[in-house]
Image (cartoon, rainbow, N blue to C red; front, side, top):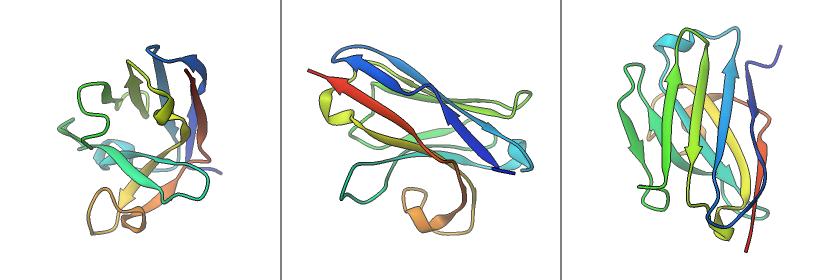
Length: 123
């Protein structure tokens, strides 16, 4: 069983919005910090946002003020509201759970990953 499943990606024009969802199963979701990463072809997977079990959050500078991370523990679901999208936001977006020590924005910190959802922003 895949522990994390992302959805909500798609094609949007620059300036538009999308909301990504990540539904967890088989994990202790409510007690786990969560994060969103993104990765383009030939690029490193980079952390863009983190949320604690109590909903404190951190953002990478490249998305600060445009993206909002949130969680609904009753639904075992993580969200990423993305506003004012830019062509450079075009990437595959992944959610991650169960940190295993280390910095939140580093890929190897996280034990569980979803399969990703593609976001494409046209100019």
